Length: 133
Image 1 (cartoon, rainbow, N blue to C red):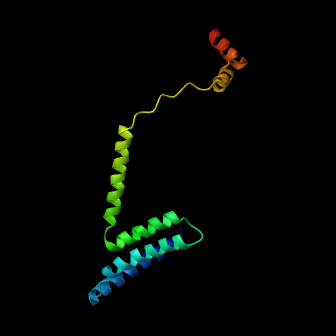
Image 2: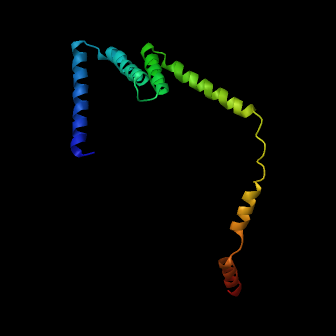
Image 3: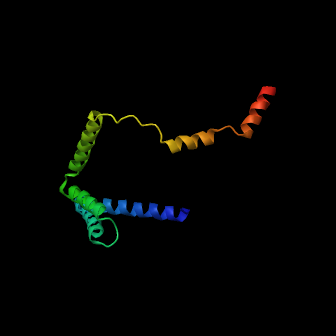
């Protein structure tokens, strides 16, 4: 990112903040309007994902649901539901019987390991050198 783009971003932020302060002085409360615009944009993006040829319909539904819950003021419902599902899953994992211990590796794997671990000439040389020292 160049120095110029940082200045542009800072300038845009300052213009936006100044404009919002000026609108507040005039008596126009933009906060209520933003409460509808942001969820609306999120819902439109989700709807495009659902109806479009590209993109995942599943993620589109989740994004649309997120925007809808934000719009009606029930976004905490989503997070509480996710927390409840996580706690239920954790309880299930704790109560579920433990898995059986792993069985011994198959014969082909044991044979392969023995071939790999077999002493070769380098190992013999190293052992002889360490004995001499």
